[in-house]
Length: 69
Image (cartoon, rainbow, N blue to C red; front, side):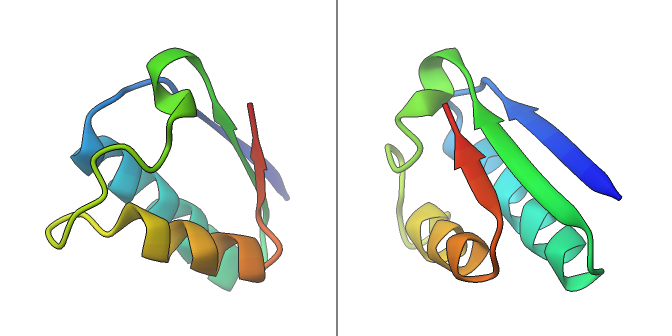
């Protein structure tokens, strides 16, 4: 199944959880695209020890997930 997730929130926790959800779905053999909209286009803003967005995004890309803006 092809899944599109639209992310438009600048909140670091929401961005982190969105990419985590994408990774979970990729592990279930789904095709996943995350579309970054508005304030979410700066995906790595808010990356921290509590919300390691960059780490999750790297895993997402290496697992053949697609990020689009």
